[in-house]
Length: 496
Image 1 (tube, rainbow, N blue to C red):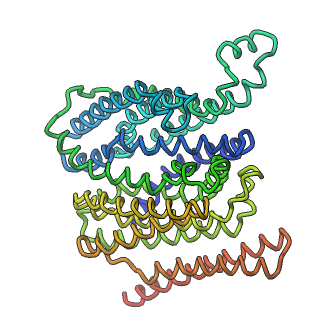
Image 2: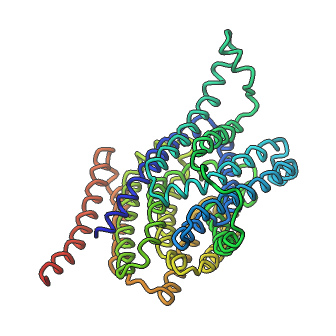
Image 3: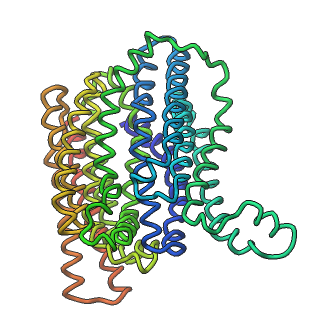
């Protein structure tokens, strides 16, 4: 329990940056969904989906390679220098090629009039890729406070620049006085949603400047033998990462090409993307957990009770995810206020996406077996399998079901990956997961959710009664979990 508490503490520290930071960043969702039309928000969602794909290519698994070889090699400074120099060089080359062919890329994406979008994203990707190893080093050295501070600065600056360009500048532009003249000198109303990307670029630039002290003492001559080992270890993770991004973002990247009504595609994409954000609580938890869990699992792998520890961590993880699932759905009337009214027609996707994210989180726990054993090629196999499921179902379901088809494809993908990873890991790296207890918690959460839906339809209660019903059902679930978890503890005490 002591090591689990340590993991929980690390998750809380990293979670502070993610939760507070994401909450700050999350304010952009109600902001965007009230400043932009559904179609304009669709543009933002689509281009950031492409950026997510490219970020995997820019970093090619080097962060996880850095964690792995920092534990294996005595000279951690050499690992750090080699990883950083490699990423800096390759990301510069990729960004240069994107800028060079920006017109062609913009045309392929059907943004012929906006090649600058490609240029801005090339610069963002370069800056973020260069910052990846310094950030990983902070995590590896348990410099959580500095990590948190820099992440919060990045997010706060991004929000500030968004508000400045999308609200402040339009209000001040064209006025009288020195300040209005200053704004008019650089502000162009026609840029529109492009200021979302410019804001991200400026925030990334400042972040890299703040990280500059982390580069002191770095050797600009990489260890090429070590680099080869790191790349070989990381390349399967690159394939897995690209396939993972297909699973995570392909629905938004290709939606306008598959939508039932091409004229409404960007509008529907905007609605779907906004409602996708309502699963943010689950996403937040999983992200913060991953920040702490990956280095934690590596540090525990040589302990005698490591596998029992991993099993316990999985159980508590599922409990937390089930609780989050219910909090969001039982109080969806509150959560939906975060998006503009014109975006709320897609709320039916939220339960499906929450379940999909839960499956993804479970898969992350299960996937540690191939990282711990160095068999990272299995990560590629599982992600490719998931990508195939995603691609087939997106092409099969979106033309007939629209964005609801995209949501079901996401759930199917992560569920398949979860099951296959468990079955494979059971043979290669057996961990005594308590499947009965884990399954019971998930099923109970689903029963509580459907009971809530049925009671609402039957009773048609007012707002106050509706919230009391949700709170009562949530308390019932929590009480059941506590009862089950205390029972083994009492049994163990009797045995002692």
